[in-house]
Length: 197
Image (cartoon, rainbow, N blue to C red; front, side, top):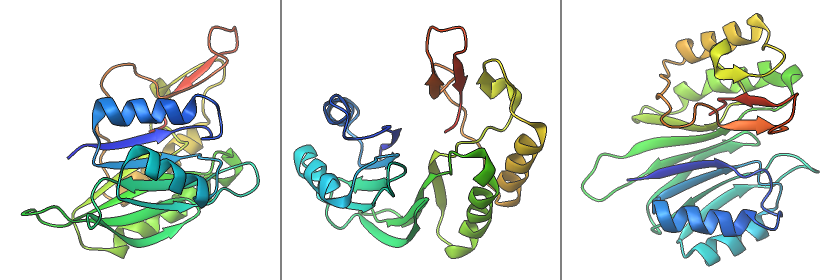
């Protein structure tokens, strides 16, 4: 099974849906989690049809921020367990395999709301006893080396996020390839790159 997580920074952008189609065509994921969609469920339904997948569930954006969605290839593969503005929790059923749980997570991007994201992460382990994977964009980092730019992330934030990950018994899957998953102002003097997933 291949699971794809992508912060699309808005599916209303001209290239976003064609880029998603290309990702799905080349990677052939069985489940796709999208964060920061910036669209409503009717657009996700259009995208589901255009990708040729059987299932989708989405949480609408609020104003000009947020929006998350999970899409899956086969009709009875995923069952929604719970959700919020920041996560969608599904039970994944594969023929001949033990059921497992997948949580797509999108942390608040505002640093002033990081504790709200952490509180949600703290609650999630107790919601199911199924084997569990959590993917997405946490909008947080575990170490200073996960950021390149002018201003370091405050140590209290790194410590706080690391503590929540440890308390929740989550383990970071090492990233292969380019070490950063998010960037701003590429090629400029004030560019910033971070490993947020």
